[in-house]
Image 1: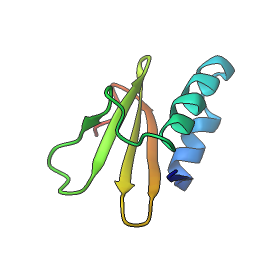
Image 2: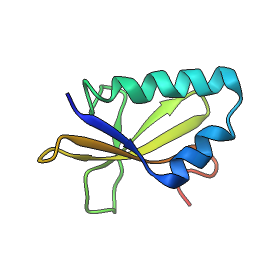
Image 3: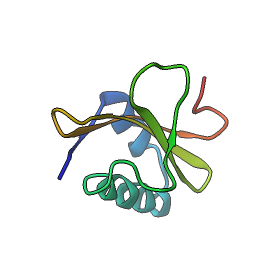
Length: 85
């Protein structure tokens, strides 16, 4: 099991989501604890790290995986038009 850690910006992003979407995103984030690289995850190019994103409707959960420490750090939860800026 991986430990899932939320960054401060990710916490702020989650607080701004509507309740229905919040529950869907939280369920997706919790699933990352058992499988940090699910089939729907995409590796982000150009970062040089183990950065990934998963899609939850029109929103993206951006996160990094540290296999040594067994942690998944959620960086941001953004709408798709804002996620990659």
